[in-house]
Length: 264
Image (tube, rainbow, N blue to C red):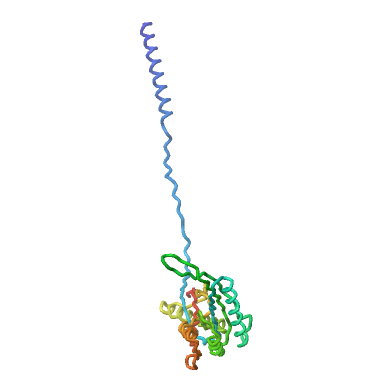
């Protein structure tokens, strides 16, 4: 009886130890279970019930140019650099005195470029400096169109050998540009009214107004006339009355706008 009791107690102790170890292992390896779903981020955009219409418009105003700009190129050649520079400076002084005698103010005369380079002679695959050439560009601005004929003719007669360009401009450019802007805004509004009426709406207040045209002084260059004067200069002939007459034509001044209107 004692033997059975001892064996029984030992077995019972072993069972209790096993159960204790199993319960401990279960508690260590088991993760808690949760029924809460993962979070989701939602962004809601606000809606704007206002309606608008955007239109663009461009308008052009033509203006007759009344002032001109001449760019002279005075060239001289000499055997050495010093003489070449001296002769070029003397020629420029003569041109300036001529222009002043024709009523051109000093403020309208500006030296805009100068360069001098050697002149080479090539023979038997070798080059040799045989002289120098100097060129000075003289820009004469704000010349009345009515005086241009006389100035060009006198320039040819006094040996000015090259005219780089003759450009026509309008002294009333700002006024013409403002007029074109006003017309562009008016045309944009009329266009917006037509589009709005087609959708059963009316044009409301201006939401946005943008000037999209570049503000540049209107001008155009008369290359044909420059070439004509140069050809007479090369032949050392006086410009005849029919060839000397200046016909400046017209300059187009354009303005563009972009406007957004409220729709009612």
